[in-house]
Structure formats: C-alpha cells, structure tokens
Image 1: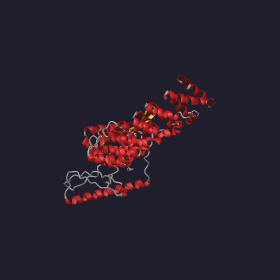
Image 2: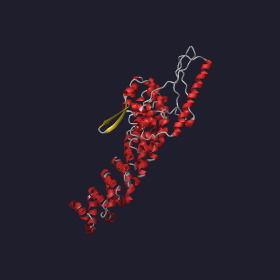
Image 3: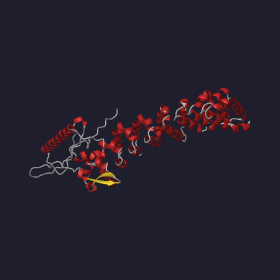
Image 4: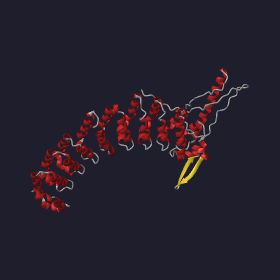
Length: 461
C-alpha cells in the first residue's frame, strides 16, 4: 500500500503577513486575497497554538525547572488538515520567579521593503537586499517562499546553501516542502531546488518524489520544472528511488513523449536507467499508433529506433519495427505517420521494404493518388532494390492503372517516377498507354505540362 504523505505545515497559507496582499499579485498572480472565513480560521488556529504552547510550558514547569536549553514545541492544527509548525520558544531560568519569555518574533518582509525600478519601460519590483543580506536563518526560512521568487533573493539563498549546505538545509528544507511544486515551476526558484539536490540524502529525495507525484506531469511539461526533474534523475542512486520514479512516470510515459519538454525527460530516462528499457519498450509498443501519428512522437520514434539499434538487445528494435509495419496501412495515409514509414524505407533493409510493398501493391492506384501515401511510394523507388522497383512498375504499367493515375495530380507524379526507374520494356509499355490517352490528357488542367515532362523519355524508345 502506498504511503500517504502529509505535508508537515503550509507556512505561507496565512493572511497575517502584510506583504502578501501587496506582493502576492506580483509573485503569484493566481493567488487570491483571503476572505473573511480564512482570516477567522487563522485567528482560531493561532489562538489554539498559543493555548497549547502555554499549557505545554506549564506542564514542564511542574516537573522540572526551566534551564537555558531551548525547548521545541511542535503541534499541528486540525482544521481542514492544514498543518502549521509551531515557532520555537526561548526559555530562561529566572532565579526569582522562573519567568518565561514570550514567543520570539521573526521579522517578515513588508511592502516598504520592496524596491521599484523601471528598466526599458518595464516595472521591476525587487526585495531590498539589505533586508536579508545579514539576516538569520529563521528570518530566511520564514520568508523563503518570497525570497526564492525574487531573482537576487534566490541567488543569495543559493550562495547561502553552498557556504553552509547542511545548516541551510536544516532550516530551508521544511520551509520549502509546502510550496515545492509551485517553486519547481518558477523561473528563479527552480535553480535553488536544482542546487539543493547536491546535498539531499536518499530519504529526502524519496520524500520529495512522493510529494510531487500528483503534479508530476505538470512539472515535467513546464519550461522550468522539466529541468528540475532531469536534475532529480541524476541523484536517483538507490534501487528503491529508481523504482519509485518509474512508478510515477509510467502512467504518463506516452503522454510525456508528445510534449516538447516532457520528451527530454523520456530521452534521459531511457539512457540513464537501462534496467527499465524493456518495460519502457512495452509502453511504447502499446501506444505505437498514437505516438507515431503525433508530430513530436514521430520524431521520438525515429530517434528511439536509432538508439536501440546500437544496443545488443535486438528484440527491442525488432518488436518496434514489426509493430510499425503492422500499422503500415494506417500510418501511410496519416499526415504525420507517413514520415515514419518513409524512415523505415530509408533504413534500406530489404525485408522491411518488401513488407511495405506487399501491403500496398494490391491497392497501388489508391495509394499513388493519396496526398501522403504518394510520398511513401516515391521513397520506395529511391530505397528499394532493382527487383523491388520492377515489381511496383509492373503493377503501375497496366492500362487500367495508367488511365486512372495520369488524370490525377498526385498519380501522374508516381507515373513520372516509374518512368525514371523502369527498364526499357516497361518504359515503352507505359509511354504507349499514355499516348493512347494523349487527346484526353491535353484537355485536363496541367495536361500539356505533364506531356511535356515525358517527352524526353521518348528518345529512349
């Protein structure tokens, strides 16, 4: 049974920060102002936290004196499963009355901390670097969400992470988790998250994978999120995490192939994790038609065949090509799918070529006149051997097919190709059949142009 992941707290789902009303529309345009019910709920949650903190401290005072050690009190509100981490409470031993200091206030970024400048008529809003340059980790983690969405703030946090990675992670990692999906897709924050993976252990990476699982597809297809996912793959060391990643990507595997950003993840996954190649190949086989008829999927199939051709497991390539040949009659008339059949012909494999010819030769007139299949027949003339060419030309040279094709814009193009590759006997047969229809050909649009094109073939008679 899959573990249920609970986000420990959502640090930025509150409305008492004065910067959110002013700053959130810049950082997150989709973030709506909090209504009165949310405000009321936050007041209730805040009061509950204070009551629980005081109650816990009094209980501790009854059993032992308070010393200089910091007591960390953690509790979670039960309202709507919205978890909040309690603030740390500093206590000191007072010889007279054992007085307790109130909860330490941590400064938050306010609207007056923002700097507004204009560059090339564009209004740029930034956080004043003086606010956070010498700030404590508590301040940085408390304002992590806003700082990561600020270009200079994000760079500062990256430098902080590099100088003291494990101290920084201890503060930043829990503050990052509640908004990690949104931050992965952010143009600035994604760089911090990528760098963070240099210092995470396998348990933390596993935790992140489980957190982002419901939004995995949206992250993969995002311009910034796709870079984060590719970065994650570099740090999947254990078998457990690799299996977890495959289980996440498996249901959306074929859909990612069709996405401009998602396909990069699939390419990297196939090359980086060869142990899943057979399972990946099976997914591709099950979706071969939808992938091959998609513009990006079609390009992927070509590159994939090229890649697996270099591997020792020849069955992978064989199964993919056979599946394409089984769907040849559908692909050959598809605006996109016909390109994969042309690609198979360009491999100049005699078995593949004769397989395609056998599938279309009985209906050669139909495919010759078809807008897309017409291109495939042209490639047959280019890549087939002599015997295969003559078998096609023999079929095309019959009077019935000639009379059908010469009056069609696509069909007469195939006739010209047949004349290019026909031996002398078959060329004469085709030309004689065309001459019998000359008067009718002259009456059709572009008929005289067609007859002019075949004039130079008469000298070979």
